[in-house]
Length: 296
Image (cartoon, rainbow, N blue to C red; front, side):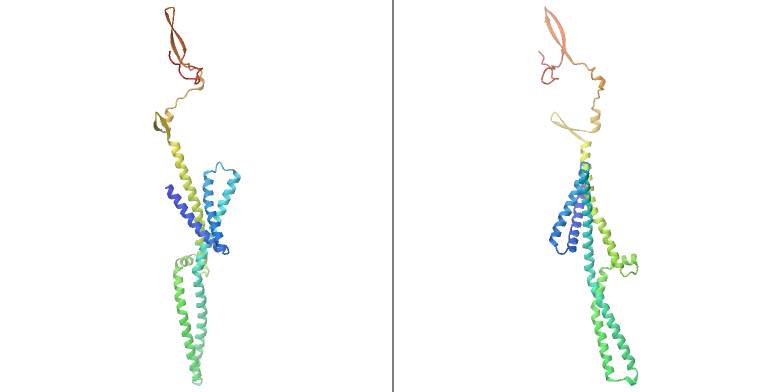
């Protein structure tokens, strides 16, 4: 699970970095590659700083801690701004053709309305016998051809508009549900979705990285606290906390002085009489104080 968390954090932060760098490059179009290099290094530094801060939070000086925390937060805001720019540009590019089509369709609709009004006027004049003439018939025919030409030009534009409307159909339904019949409802809904993505994208990547560090640190601490490796006679044994507690021997402080020094007896023959002399068991003048005397 720890490695999966690390992998998710790295992938999410990598995608966020890509969107952010492209978005910042779209904002500062005059320096594309410098912005790409700068954004990439800043994104990597942000992740390293967040991880280092968590690992060294208790020992890090207050001034350095404050600056690094502020730097991580500011870099998260910059990344979010780049993501907003990238997604906004994608939406604008997708609706640019639709906008030009809409303008052209509106212009053709106006021409169609004017031509239709002209045709209605000519047809009304033609109904009166006194106005009947070859000139009026020619005007009616020319107006009808002009109206047909307008409809012919408008047909492919309407097909393209319907295709673009189908592509933005889901967000259009969201816009209608939230903003009703507002003319700018589609743009408002797109901005809302982009803001929601921006809020959870890069912060989630940083928090996942910190969560992975937390899990890794807890795993290391649990190994250190639960087991202890000791070597006895060339054989390694593992003792738990309960076993170590049971093997402890406590000696009260006031009883230390009352512990008798171990002694050993030594036989001495004097005038045919064997007597025992008690002497200390350890040679305190030896280089190591508690080394036993060699028996003679």
